[in-house]
Image (cartoon, rainbow, N blue to C red; front, side, top):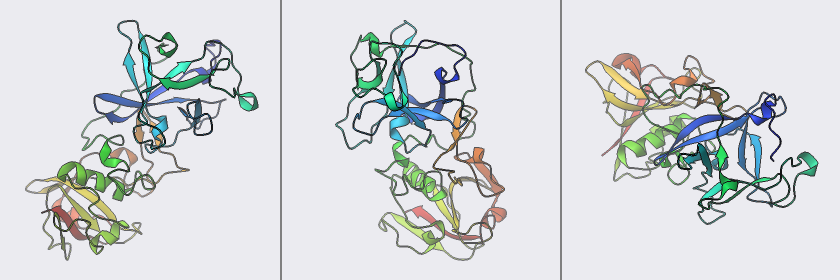
Length: 317
């Protein structure tokens, strides 16, 4: 809803949190503190009968398409259009929906929420109309925040197609997990979607999805040939009760440059921290900030670093 500006009302202050890329656009969540609750809430698209109503709901993760937004400027006015990124919503025909204000201030909420899209103070999603001032929003900076840290990133996720349902069978139930990540990176690097399936340790033995294009070498950790742009499969061992898979980015004479995800969601949420989305990590010693970034290990150490050691390499033929 809309309400008279109050500089002391934290619920009127929104954080634009980086959430990935969509073509030329940068995607964000708009998060607020709702009624003093510390759990972050995000502006999103209502999923009930009033399909295009705008509301706030707890920040989910990259799989919540109706919480992802991007901005376009209104000339040099200092105002912006707030576009809804809902590319994968199969319920509607594709439309450019932008946040739109009803003409009346100080609406109501809770049990007295508006029951139609245009009641007093309501805010809703409506198809973009060039020049419509009810769709133009002034940006007033409360604090500069922190820019997302792209240092040493292997990939920009989670918004790219490689990590969504069209091309990744681990989406959305395993967003942040190693199998979701490696399917995405294998597609990015090799142009082949869903190379494998099952838990991480099962990638050693489960049939390959596309055997004409995908190869696999299995054996003892010290004997398997390491390859760039491949998935390394590690077996069950220690804290790795389902094994682990990582993506080998490149090889040097002595080192393996790799990337991975190793996150476990808490209550279906990803962690929001310092201007970017991170996956909370439940398995030591890896930190959430490592997810999606290039890491390096000596080749001998890499072969034995996860679970019970390297079990297979999956690569493009």
